[in-house]
Each structure stands twice: as C-alpha cells, then as structure tokens.
Image (cartoon, rainbow, N blue to C red; front, top):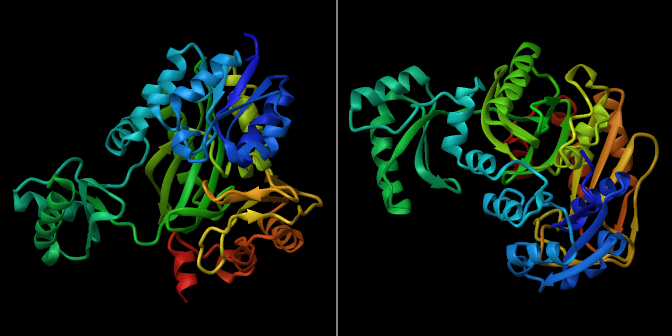
Length: 448
C-alpha cells in the first residue's frame, strides 16, 4: 500500500498545525482550507496549497461540507483529515467524503453513527464486555413494584434520566426508596414538557467519580492496540482543563480488564483509526460513558509516555498500512501532564480575542508546546478559545508537575488574557498534588 499523496486539513488552529507536521514527516503534500480571517494561521503559511473556503462564521466555512469537498476536488487531494471539533464526528460528512472518492481519515461513517448515539453505544459496549453504568436496561414502565425493585438492585443513590434528555435537563438524583416514585413522576412530566417524550430510565448515580479514558489505534487489517489510559478529571462545565497519562492511582486489575475490553470492543464493532473510550472511575471500577471517534485534544500526553505519534498513525492507517507496533511493543514510560491554554479571562472565563503582541514558548527537557501562536498573530473571536497546549514529561508524576510549574512561569502571552493564572494555581494545589480529586473538584475549588 502506498502512503496518501495529498491530504486536505479540514480544521484550524493548533490541531491543523499538528496534522500538517505529521504529513510533512511522512512526505504527504498538504492543503490548508481556511476562512477569510484565518489566512494568517501558522499552518496556512506552511501548507503546500491553500484554499479560502468562505467567511468567518464556522457554519459558512469549517462546517460547510460542499465547499470543503469542492476544495478537495480542485486541489486533487486524496485524503481529508477532520481533526477534532467541527465535522470530526459528523457521520454524514464522513459518508460524503468517501462517496466523493476521497479517504476520510477516521473511522467508517456507520461506526461514527453507532458511537454517536448514547443508547446504541452503551448497548454495543455491553455486548463487547465493556463495563457500563448499572441501570434499568431500558425504560421504566408504570409498574411501581418493578421500578422499586430495579432501584434496589442498582443500589441508591440512583439517577432518573429522560431518554430524550440532554444539556443537564430531565435528570434527577434520588437517595432513598421513599422519594423514588414521586421523583419518577416529576421527571416523566418534565421530560414530556421539555422533550415531548415522557420515557425515563434509571442509572446508578456516581457521586465521586474521576474521568479516565483509554486511547486505542486500529488498522484495516484487524490489528488493535491501546496506548494506556489518561485522567481528565480536572474539568469546568464538562470542558477538560488539565489531562495526564497514565491515570494515577488506578486499581491495576480493573485497569487491565478495561484495557482488554476496549480492544475487544474495537474488534467487535470493526473500528478503524484512532479512538478514545471515556469512563467514569469510582471505587476501583470503570463505567463506560461514551466513545470519541477522532483524535482528541489531549492526545499528546499518551504520545509522551508511549513514544507513538498518534496523528502519524492515523495517516498510515488511512493509507491502508498495518499498525507499526504490536501491543507487546507498547511500554508506558514516565508521566505526562497537559495544560490547555485558552484565550479567556482567568476569572470570568469570557473569551479574550485580540492581537498577541509577544509570544514566548517555554523550553527545556521534557517540555512540549503545541500552539499556532506567534508574535503579531491576532486571535479571532469566531472560534474555540484554545491557543496552546503545554505538555510536560517526567520520570514520575512529581517531576512532570514541577516541570509544568516552571513552564507555566516561563510562558509569555502578551496582549490578550489567558487562563495561565488558573493553571499556575492548579499545579500548586494540594488536591492536584495528592491526586485527591473528582470531576467536581475544580468547580468546587473555584467556588471556594
């Protein structure tokens, strides 16, 4: 099999630059598509060819499927890499890319569709032996006895969830049997009013979970490997702020079982490409929540501890080449931490676009900076506020943490506000140092 000759990068910012670098290493020609305001992006300056695909609004540019496919046609591209965000997990886009005769650098459209629906994803994972959150396995009926029995089997506290719910609505936590039936009625009424569907189901409510995820790679020849796990519990409004690999203080037996289950699941669903299984981890057990069918923002921490270039593997897989590594060749070495640097006010989190007067990246042993910033670059107000990812590696977690502390002090972004002060505080925080945190830790810390 020959390597893809030319790849169109259907994204912007740091991930577009990340993809461009991997393409260059493999001798693949690059096409950068960009909105009007993005013509000064670092990867646009470095790409072999560039195509302006529309105005600044994402719907008219980076989300505009016909325009992106036209750009691929005009430039004779062979593959299209969606990065993360925008169209990366859009099954219709993946389908249209393949139908138009291009190679989508990611899983098959039907896999994206299967894993994009929470209910079908959980069913598929159960079938493959991946641990899921205990629940009622289907909707509640008007049989009160059955409902009470189910809740007892699951164990309190339980969460009543609307089947069609989302965005934090149509959910209620119940701590005792006495309150259950009334709460079910209330949630059903709420669900009917909000979503037009009164169907609810039960799930165990995990009060103090951490967020742990598993990185996998699968080729077109049935080979699947995992690159260990990551902890992404430091979150604000379900947005990850700090990630690390491997996940610290995890039960080793439970981890081995889960890693193996993820590989089995990939084989079961015929997964191809890079992917991530996300879990809640509590009391030594893993509970599957969802799968991301794309490269993730936090992929560098896994790269740092395994030595595997995930984006390069994505490109090789899409070219039809077998994986370069077997599972026996993957060894976790040391510890890596990533801080997401956003252009936002560190107190109010309001985005802070504008001109970067001066940018200085930190350096030294075990320091990596993935960023599209340069002095004189203007951060536009139309897109996600991520401007840099600071990644440190060390022989152990404490060395990686100290390196991060130094790197955050060295890094200079002048002209716009960033969340650097928040990160400086977090890497010095006792809870972070001691791995004494859950997914609720950061929000609580900020309220106090």
